[in-house]
Image (cartoon, rainbow, N blue to C red; front, side):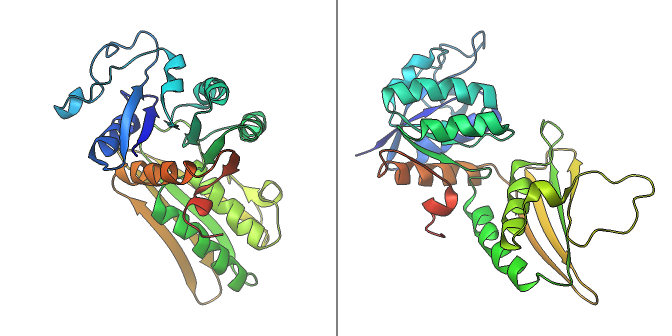
Length: 266
């Protein structure tokens, strides 16, 4: 039986990529496509940009989320939290691909997971989540004598920094070393900074052009440097990972999960 998928932000870059992935999938079907009120595409077929007919019209009625098994939401935190309330009431599972949540937002997601299945991941890419696993191993092996820096670059339109993926990489590395990222992260360097604190994890953020997403974690030792890198060339990797998460969620009635759970890496 096909998984009924709802997509928010249906006219955005990620929304369109998700719609394309669903239309190409053999085991999922698009049932809801949402956009913000006033969007000129409202009333149009959701797959019109592909030259296809999906039979689903773009709408601004969030109550339609009840007509889906799983919502895939890459919109901004305020939108996600609004949609989450409707999904919790209707029993619709949720995949949260948005980043930039504060502690209250993360707590709201965790609370909703008491009633519905939720996959919340800062990056839905299968490859990136494999990198998370590799970083855990690398950090434990290189725990002494190596300085750790994280460099990320995204397109000029990205609104949050560092990226959610970079922060998650930092959390994975810090956790493997028995540290709390909040205590050791360094986000700004300017002027006379003094020597580098060996326990710190530094972040460098680059923005420009149409870069989908590049991330590198550097373990710099004396005489050698180990770098773990992931480069994304298409947003389709996030869409494909989201559909994999949707299949996983259909086996979960409630609970909070991430892509490590989806991929069986824990």
